Length: 472
Ligand code: BYC
Image (cartoon, rainbow, N blue to C red; front, side):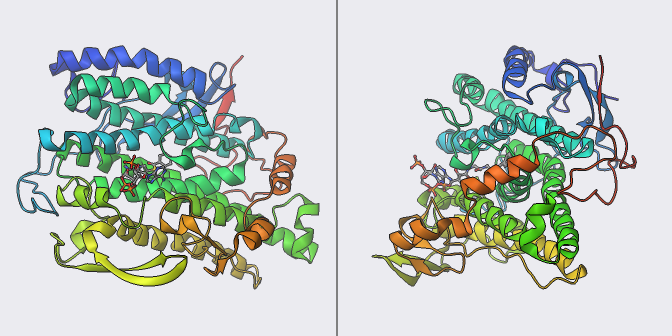
């Protein structure tokens, strides 16, 4: 059962009246933001079969029911405290974790929490028109499930800001509702969150690649010496897994349908004529979203990242798997660009922490691409999808200063300008995608022609279940 408290929580909010009042004061502003910037056209007359977090109990943390979106119960849930937990890395390795924010790290922590928090509402804003082009009720429900949980992740960060950062934290919480994805004067902080997502191939790529940056960043924050931050992000990862499932299987179902149409058409170029999405278009979208999400990991050489690590604020993914946790004398061998030429240099490992996390991320992405290729293989096709080289199409870091093709070959400015749409979606590709997604499919069990049905429904329900219903 969902608790009847105004803000469902497992942090004994009722015992801290000041905090409770402050959050209850923020709540109406949040709901107003959700109505204005959340899914457009689905706020009043639709009921969505969604899960709501009600506890952090691994055996049953979520409750499933039909909900009108603005009435979703966004709550605050932290993973259970680990007794006697100690700091797992950096200069304070082995000391007890902190339950309060140390003054000297206040700014760094605030910045990390605000950056994390900013991405959550941003993604909801980016996706707010997508419902009008949905390929099925099943997918529409998944979109809204992702959206409401990104909203809850914003709550998770706002809880930390209100609890530990006083007046500054309250101001930051307001700013999180004031910045807007794509707004010229007040954009979202990280660039990939300022692009609108208006077609479902972009949505699935975003949930596959950009939400997976969410996973790598949350994993690294879940190691934090600030225990409430570690516990909050640990529980967020539980919800995040479904978001990546949506992306991974969404692209997989498109690849499956494409493979079926390729066999029908005989030639891959003819897939578009049959209303499907050809493999080159899928590859271009992999190239785009993978490279944008690599940028989200920051610069290859970063003193910020070194300071976060030294202070135990933000670590590596799965820190326990590493042998050495202080990382003082080790070096990282980095590919660099020096005066326009590629070279290898050794840098102190702490300064390379963004790159270390990026390594983890690339490997995690590759496993998804391998699954999609298995679909092609199972259909007897020899075509394969690939991740582009990590130097391709970078906007952040040293490789942003030059151009590379997806194999990592350096290009002149002229060749890049002439050929970039061989590798990245061109305006015509986008037009084509919008043309095959020009209507939404609201009939239970029916799917748009460009995507296969999923293997199974949600929470044991059949595929033709009415995942979103309209009430008049
Ligand atoms: N765009 O030392 P550096 C998610 C700036 S996604 C714009 O490398 P650092 C989700 C940087 O701010 C996960 N600017 O930076 C997914 C700095 O600026 P200043 C979100 C950028 O701090 C889907 C300067 O460049 N969570 O959860 O090591 C749906 C120097 O850079 C960018 C987090 O990001 C960029 N891409 O690393 C919903 C975790 N990259 O100080 C949700 C928190 C760098 O010179 N954030 N800059 O003005 C962090 O850990 C770090 O801030 C970053 C950057 C990894 C983002």
